[in-house]
Amino acid sequence: MNNFIEYFYNMRVDNIICNKEYCSFVYDEYMYRLYVIDETIDSNFLINLEKRLLGNTLINEIIFNRDGSIVSNYNNNQYMLMKIYANTKKKITLDEINYLASMWNVRNLKINWGILWERKIDYLEKLINENGKKYPIITDSFNYFVGMAENAISYYNNIIFSDDYTCVISHKKIRFSDTTEVIYNPLNIIFDYRVRDIAEYIKNAFFNDNKSIFKEIDYYFRNYPLNQTDARLLVSRLMYPSFYFEMYEDILIDNVDEKIIIKTVNRLTEYEEYLGSVIGYLNKLYGVQEIKWLNHYYK
Image (cartoon, rainbow, N blue to C red; front, side):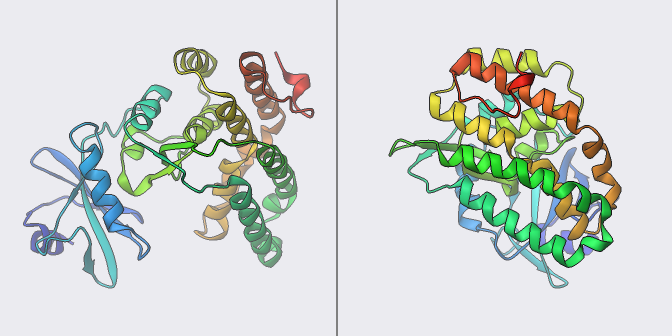
């Protein structure tokens, strides 16, 4: 790997640390990550993203190789090298999410969460039918979370959109312990509804035991108010259990220990109360439609 980096990027480095996603090293006092990427990567999108955001945000800087490409091939893998500017230890905040989202928006992007979520459920059901006997914890909990997802789909399908609805910089995944580095990683950036990241942050805050989340939520919505469509989209996304489905895929596809979901499953009643409190707050603030199976938790 040292020779590969020196050959393609003219960097002589030591102390390279690798995991399944990337290799890390320090060069000229900056952290660099060499990411393993797949063939579906859209190089033009990433280059345009860099041109728009580099210098105005802490987005990772993609390093071109000796051939003038952002992709390097080595031992049957494709790699992309990035220089890290964001704090690798600082936790994500709603303010940080909002700042990045405000940097760029696009109109008339065709997105349908309902269809995407239905496809996800069909795909996961196929996996569990083929592998269920190996994973008793998933088997016992899967139908509960499918029920939550179906509620989210039903709610989403009743939202009426304007013809020129705007989408903003969002992220494929926001997980429990992510730092700001993750939201400034171009490989994690997509365009989606404004509330996608907000919902993921709020859901993850519960499982990350964020004690100040309601104070943070109240500050955010009073300073950056939602319109009615955004408010309803947020409710639908809050009900969609993305955190569970991500762990599910980690277990069945990446062979992570099934026990990672035990804490989540054991806190379901507590999570319902939390979800009910958040949606109850949105009901008071924006008059969003009540969720009957959660409204006894409204405060």
